[in-house]
Length: 312
Image 1 (tube, helix red, strand yellow):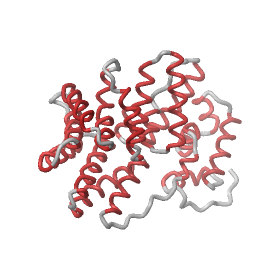
Image 2: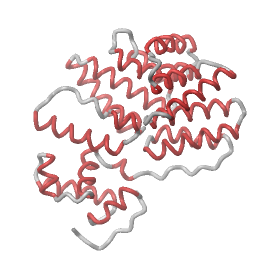
Image 3: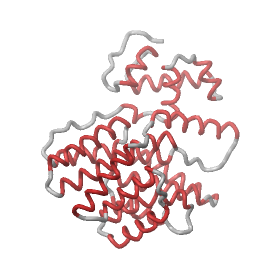
């Protein structure tokens, strides 16, 4: 969760895969929630929605309110990234109810406020902002930054600009790149609607570069569309072949890239070497490579590698 909130999706993916393996080996049946927010921020609807549906069904069957709230929060992130604000509001509202866990609610409320403003529910947005402000502590740039970003959404004119600027400044002092990028994005969207295109481009470029770098695909595309609306020419991000890989496949290929043998990978993941070999064959086919030596290039520059003639 910390790696996701910091924008290190690669590490978060590897850790989520490890948790899946540990749960399977130990027989733990608690709902897995650590990869929900990661799926929301990655912004791949088909992949994320399958995970959310399965997680919600499992959580309701077990009576795990924490897992259900977490899934709804993560789905709100996904939908806000995609610009599906009606859908975001539909899942953020129940996840922010008074009966839910407060420490998750404070993360849900900014999603609820953004979705409510975009669906012209100013009354609901202001009510949610009041709750968020009551939960915000003075000593945290993260908390105050999220409050400022949310307050900007329900404000106009000079007050809105001051709040956006405060949000960017405060979140810029943290390591929480997704929240900082979203502050730049919202600020840029507001500036464009104020017909301040040059100022908007500055904020939107900052948002796009951050979001594209960390792999927040839906939010990055949203920033790209806004840049186009200012008259900028921005190339659409090349489809990443990694989107075809499962979390376990990504974890295995990163271990292989780092020099682990098939036997070492198998021992760490509690699977057979034959299973590791099977996964690697599938991954090589998906990435269009034929050798471990090509993994590093494939992982850093997907879609731009040149296959060798090795059959290792």
